[in-house]
Each structure stands twice: as C-alpha cells, then as structure tokens.
Image (cartoon, rainbow, N blue to C red; front, side, top):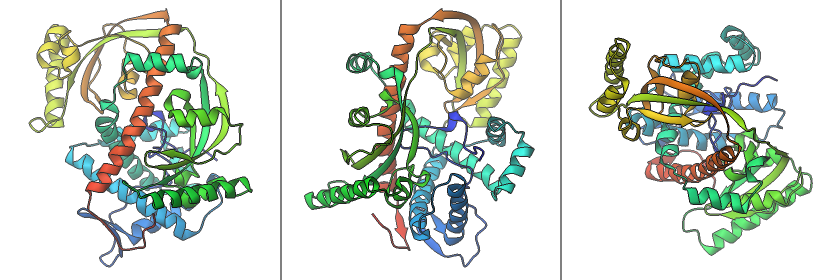
Length: 437
C-alpha cells in the first residue's frame, strides 16, 4: 500500500487528522434535482449522492489499510456527522474570506506525489488503479487546505505558551521532550451540562467497550463504530505524539501501559477517552542546528483590501526593493505584522520549525541578501529576505523550544475541540436520518 495522506504541513493535532486520506473526496456538487437530502447545514445540504460517494471511497481506504469493514449504517452515521462539521467549517472559512488558489492545490498534489516517490501523472495512475478518483482527490485537498488555514487563523494563532508553563513542564517531566507515544483513541462525547444519569450511562458504555477490547474485540472496528473523535474513520489511529502534546491525564495513563495495552476510560471535560498504546520511543535532540536571520513584509486580506490588492501592492514593493530602496523603511511603513514592522520587519534568529512550513520552505531556499517572490501562508502574503545564517549548538534551547511546541500543540487541540463544538452548536443543522449520540 502507498501513502495518500497529505504532507506534514497539513497535519494538525491530537484529535484532528482532518487532512486524512485522499480516498475521502470533497463533496461533489453535481447532484440531481431529486437527490435525497440527508441533512441541512445552515444554507447548504448533505445529500444521498454525496454520502454514497464518501461511503464507497471510505470503504476502499479501510480495505487498503487492512481495517475490517463495519456495517454500512455505522459508516454512514460517522460520515454524515463528519460532513456536517466539514460544511460548518467551510462556511466559516467563506465568511472569513479564506481562499485557496489552483497553484496552492497543485503544490500540495505535487508534494504528496513526491512523498510517494512519484510524479503527479504516475500518482494519478496509481490512484485510478486503487479505485480512487484523481479529481476527487484534488477537490479533497482544496477543501482540506481551506480548513487548515481556517484552523490556523482561528485556533493555532491564538494560542500562547508562557515561559512559566515551559519551566513547569520541564520540571514535572524532565525526560518529556525525548519520549513519543504511538497511540489509538476512542472518544465518547457527553452533552454540555450532562446529568448525573447521563454521565453514569456513558461511563457504563465506556467500561463495556474496554471489556470488549480486552476480550479480543477488534479495536479499529470498535473505534469506527463508537468513537466521536476525528480519527474514528481511521480506526482511532492518532499516530506518534510527543509527551508535551498530550493532556496530563493521557500521559499518566500511557506511562503505565505496555505496548498493546488498553486504558480504562479516562474522564475528560467533554466525555470519556479510551487509549491504546501501540509503541513508545525516545527521540534524542541534536545540538547543532542552522539558524536563519530573516526579515519580511506582510500584507493581509481584509474588508478593505482584497488578496489581489495585497498582491499588487507587494509586487510594487518588491520592484522598489530590487531598485535599491531600504527594506527596513518599507517594512516599517507597509508591513501589517506590527510586532516585526517596528524593527524594520526583522524576525531575529530563528531555529528550524519556528515559522509555518510554507514560509520556511521558501526562506530556507534563499541565499543571504536574496529577496523572495511573493509567498502566501495562512497569515497572508509575504516578501522575505534572508540576512545571514549560522550553525549553533542549542541543545538546551532546543529542549525548551520542543517543550514549548508540544505545549502549544496540546493547548491548540483543546481549543480546537471547543471551537468546533461552538461552531456546530451555533449552526442550524437538521437531520433527515436517524442521528445517534
């Protein structure tokens, strides 16, 4: 089997592998006039034709991943819920003015093909051979990039980590940045303000699921049938996570498990979690890294400035820079990154992984004093100039940076769950099929 998952810059969080397999296409809009409506989501609908396409592709993907197929009604229920949440997110992205160009999608498709050691043409042929629709794959990638940018804007960019949080983590978990866990997950949700009876009933259901697994039940099938987590259709597989990315309750449980072990139900703010530890490994932190000193000018899309307007303005600024105008002066008067604009766009010395992958990829290919073309990231449009590079032993700094990144990831996961629940609660959703809890 070959990998059809998006490259790492589209992969987010503990419970959010939304940018999953290409086998799950974006929702088609070529439905017939008599197509059955399964759900209304604000001013949009989920139809039987769309669900049938997702069902077929999801079943093919599960076969490729060697996960035993559950009953169709189980997959239908999971897929309708996922499609509803996807619709709500896409609508939020449209309101926010988030767009994805054909060039962005083409780059993502090329990245995926190259990660599978193929060119795009070879990759499309392989998709067809596996029974997957290449155009549906492209449509799915566009949808996933849009949602990724929305989440980056509404969730990730709003999470901060204090120095005190980093120090507390390192004192409590001195080896925390070195350890990773490969885990799978089943999540049973509770409604807000759940009654004592509802909580007790869900606890009994969680206990029963654990009992089924420990008596030889297939974890992946049980996850698909029961989990409300974002990884449900992957058989609950989350993959590798560093210690700091995990909630304290998860970490304490995983440290007590042997590979293959399954936890008792863990009560969280929104429900019960069941974990399976697949593998554990250490990750040594190398001392020497290449640091980059760069500066940039950022323009954002806004109500008074379209993306095309911002691009045109940056094209003009780039021409002025190429003709010898001072970068720092233009950054101070034009850049919408207020933190760096005051310093002439200076971003200081940066370790690998500090910036968004789109930004860092271009930055890493620039020579000192070279000026980039216009670069688009979830934050807007940039002009980047690298000033200098250096190699430095930053073992201690890297440990702290790793801890900070892990804590940020954990807090972003928690914020994401709250954000999605709020989006879903604020949307008008009406089902025309039986909805299960």
